[in-house]
Image 1: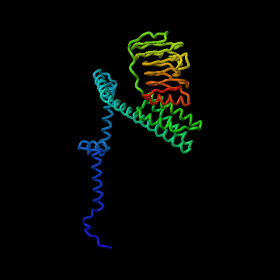
Image 2: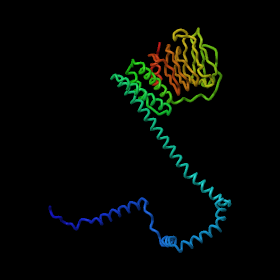
Image 3: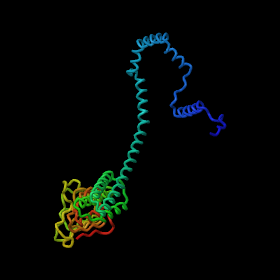
Image 4: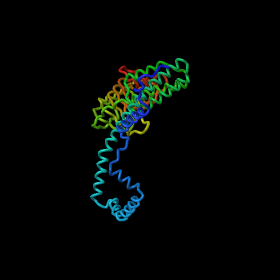
Length: 354
């Protein structure tokens, strides 16, 4: 074994422990964990309290003070003096006004930030789950495809409820993935139908609502050409658009308020079942509330707000139509898929069915 050199330079165990204690003292002092050193008066007081003789005398003195001063002390505790009450109320008021609002504001801000994060996660989860489901279908793993589609549907629903923002590219990407597969299994076909409708509903939930006209006017009930002005027209009953002539409704940016209609009541009811014979055209209009079936009408520059949208699979034209906070009742066939895709993407080009 080689000889040990410079042994005098190696600190002893006692010196090492002393260094550790000094470092711990420094850390505890920095963190405020060490008690302060007691002063002379504190040390004298500890001696008085701990000494048997002096502790008995101190106990007798405190007993007398409690008997004599207890009533007066209780008098103050009961807030008998208005000046004392006012000072207490003022201090409490200051504390509430100064301390709690910033804390509440900070918690509200944190809650809003957390909601935005959760909404973003829902959007990402929906896209990932839909992509996974499509890949599982292509590999023939249908059980996993169903599970992924269900997860995507839940994520879309949560994003819809929270109105989490999403870009048009998101809807384009997700729609392309949905349309890239055509599952033949009934359960998967149903799940993908729900995804198409869910995507349209989500887009509708985050679309901004246009400004409604402030001026009101009475809605005409007869005629084959309705030319409206820039006003908001209240409607309580359905408007039947009957042949034998073409019917054109020129809104000119007007709005029709149908919120007073009964649930399920239609706004416009075309008597024709063709877009070529006695056609019906509705353009440049904002429709609010109620229910509207899209079939057998040409819709141009229309915004539906809080409307239950139905489509039965018939002929329809959609040109620059948008949906705001709407719900959808669509068939699961190819025509229904086209309408769902249009509502989700809101393309510039016209959708022509039939």
